Image 1: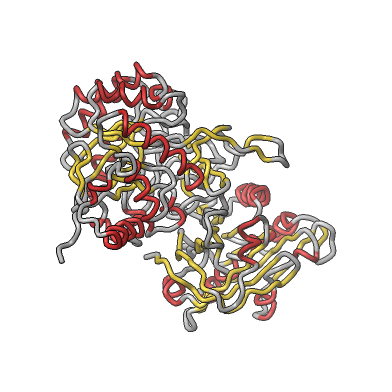
Image 2: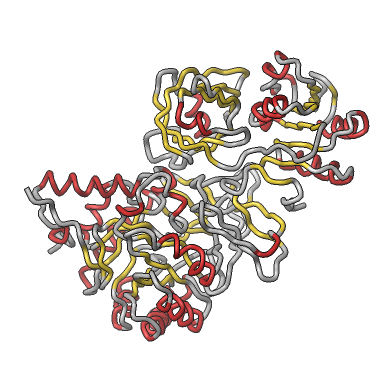
Length: 281
Length: 305
């Protein structure tokens, strides 16, 4: 059950220019949190900016009740978030959304992240590790300055390969190059992906070609975060049987003529089965 | 000391207090049940409901504006039959009247919606949406034409025994005329105001941000417009008013009530603060206590009476 909590900011520091790591003392939200979920944050106390900001969970320390958020400053809201100092109280709602789930049968998982989209993958990687699944982690970034979220992965010795557009770190090129290679070398039987939409779309296409199932974590402009405003939609394939439910914040509407639904990223997602999502060209 | 009276009667809809939810801003109820006790609401106005399921508009559906938001959801909803079979049983568990916001493409749609919802056990009133700016057919077209607005209300009244609340659009030259028209057609109450038609352009892509180009502006940015309209309509039309438009606090609600609203609906505030309805209710109570107001009804229109 999600809650609203006044979390205490333990730390909020830049890890790279424009990228920040915030630690929150938020025992109630942490207790319920799962990999792939997010919190909805009120970044200021005034009416402008008005809406909360959804930020994914980068680390979930259930023992200490501490949540970590790795985020990038993209606009006014995240700029204000970056200016909040340790010791401040922060109004958060969470945990929200449906997180990642373990595959039924798979043994070798490919975990693919791009840019700040690597943030929600860290708890997933931990979950896969605990479940004893073999995994290979492929991250793509613009350049060396944009490389974030790799410290824990490296510390734990999890197998990681990086691609950068300019070759300043790792493979020169796109992460999809590494994905192609991994399909041959690593022979994954499942995958997870989070990052820019174009990257997700390309990874999903490659994996579909190779007939490998997986999960995608999406982003969308969000209003309420709880399934009430119906703003953060993505196109998904029609659910079988035309089942619709409005209880528990779920609402998906079967169209008459169209062969898709508008699902909500906040409550149906942010994690979807890769086959569910329809990406527009 | 006796507790002050918070109960109001909105055109036949008995509410234990004047605080309800604005349609489209509270889903069908369960979305906010983790955050507030739905029993404490004066009423719940649910998401706009149409005869058939609607997919709604393509994204982008929301954009933040100064102290507000623009939305173009396009009445995405699962249809009235699904509402009656799946959402209503859940809502009936609460001791809070359920108001269903209805929207149609044609007069026949409104008639059928009114019939089905009146026959369903558990609906306390109908809020007739003739003001949605985000749909191509019906919607605001009905609400900006005095004759059509009255026809819709007349049709709904013919097919229901429930109180009928006409939700009007502010996107008109003279809202008082429309209010008078729907009053003559038999509306039991008015809901003021729906969103203001607005637009945002992304200066980097040089294209409109919303998938539907234009959208409805809500939030604190529109509050002065809503207060003005309630002030004008309340003095011209003898119908109770459900006031809405950027109410974030008890103080805001009191302003609407002083302008002439009998009850208030909390909309966009829910997205910012999931306890907004409760904060508004508690703020109203504190105001009444501070000024020794024994009955909330004493304040309705007190700014001009």
